[in-house]
Amino acid sequence: MSAQPKVYVVDDDAAVRNGLTAMFDAAGLPVEAFSSAKDFLAAYRPEWSGCLVLDVSMPDVSGPDLQAELNRRGAQMPIIFLTAHGDIPMTVTAIKAGAVDFLTKPADGAVLLKRVRAALARSTQMAEGLASLTEREREVMTRVAAGLASKEIARELAISHRTVEIHRARVMQKMKARSVLELADLARALGLITAPPDKGG
Image (cartoon, rainbow, N blue to C red):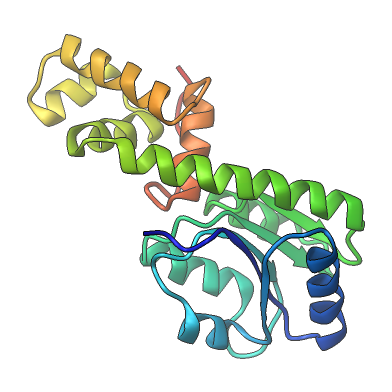
């Protein structure tokens, strides 16, 4: 059984960490804070669900490095990055790797709360949707999200085009995705793909 969705704060700045913890706690959101990516990884369990509020620049293991490690582990946790230094290439890289947001410190509390609540809802949606997929549907989802056409998927999986279309429709329904681009966003957040789709239809 999955653990209760929670906000996980990882920031080496004690003032920021304590401030965020107090804010989420006051908003009635379960929260747990860590002073480093290493501490978070030492405590991390695969059944954890929720949202990760993650500092970009930390000693030893950076925020993007932690993101990469969680992707390798197949973690299904939306990530909101916080940074004191607006860095466009870093933002693009983080978003491509599955981050759902990238906010500059000091982040507006109301905005951050709104984004975190949306991420928690998305985390629940992703976990429930992914758990409901069959193995074949997951194979089709990964390929659709990566931008492959139904004919290409049919060829790769040695099934008919019609069968691919049926699986594709079920995947969209189960994942509550309104478009292929939205499905690709979910797939990236789940660590199923790491690059944006080549095409959106």
